[in-house]
Length: 567
Image 1 (cartoon, rainbow, N blue to C red):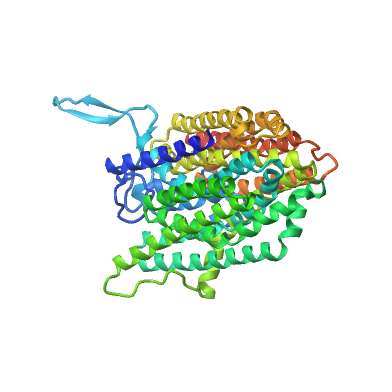
Image 2 (cartoon, rainbow, N blue to C red):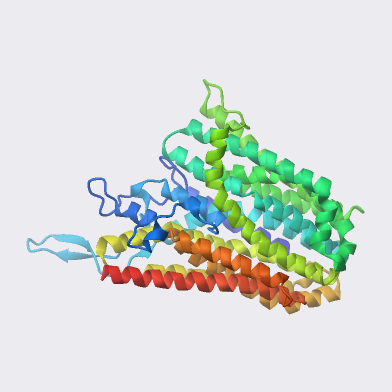
């Protein structure tokens, strides 16, 4: 069942992309990728564009001191959405807000002719434009959670509860450490998008090569850290009550450590491909990794006595092959584009000046990921105190959580892409456009509810897909409702966060993330820390819920301020 769900999800994305490609919904862009259909921006006169003002924000939108912040001054902005929003930002004035449909009507004039004019109705969004934007980016987001979910399912079914519990600290160490360095991919996306927008393809290639070098070094550092200090780190994550799982977790982590450079390099290659409008490459790479991981993990776990080590080897081989495919695609593309000149090397060492420029883009994203990792790892450590049964159930719940997170991420991305156009309409007409904003929020709530129901059903009704241990299955069923709630709150939080990012309310987002992260961490370390698996997951639900409430109310406040100014 779990394999069918993953295959269905991937197939749906591939079919959508293929359908759009056949219908020319993915036109070859003049400059950059992931852009709405190109039309003229309403109200553009003498170089003035309300669309650019709407995208970059103004002092009329939010408080003066907050609106003047640059994207690199914020802590806590969405690491997945910054890069894609900047792709839109670099498209130029004419491409922002082009996917708004304003209702029109025909009016008869005195001379008997007719003319088309806009009605006072609120504009709507182009559904196909939304899908065209969401579908390819899912390939970038779904690869890591799918890999770990496959390992969780196979190990839980065929290796027993101890190895399943060992996956929790093992995956936490490997996945969280590599996730911490995904800021390299986001920064590369921003810089590549800017270079392409300026028509400098050579600069874009060099940025990708430098990012690949940084990814290679970062992955080698993480791999070496696991090899040298894996055991004490895993002991710290698992806790004394779950010390029995550390040997198995170490076996898993040591094998996966060799794949860290490939994982981070793959994230850079996928991000660069999306920035250059190559949606097929990331999709194929995810498909390759998925198929190889399923085949390799099932074969090595079921047909040999390798157990959890076999699952790690299967994932490692899948990562290596998928990354090699992406790097080979980049290399072949460069050779084709520069037949009469030397192609840019695949890996280039950046200069000190260029490295500083890269850090400028990457720093806020790094601190964002760090804040989230503190919360997720803190919850994992609190569960480790409860023993191996709770740790095994937590592994299934956490991998299920990350599997459904892209639902909220995609809606948040949609808010960032289309809200600037809505704001441009408000600025042009002087009338508030509540309908489209309401549609974005409603979409986030609905998507979160659907994902939460599916997330609830997976461990509660399908516990047998992950374990044969009755105690672990019972823990999954008890905690599944909290998992569903966390997913729904995450979707709402990401939708509202996307709307705030589109309005560049970075000052509020920075303060909100800092306070929420510190408060959650303090609660996990306080005498009131949870003493059950369900209690630990209620902390995660509280973290997501507090973000969703803060961001939703902030959007309401900003909308009211804007309506007052328009009035």
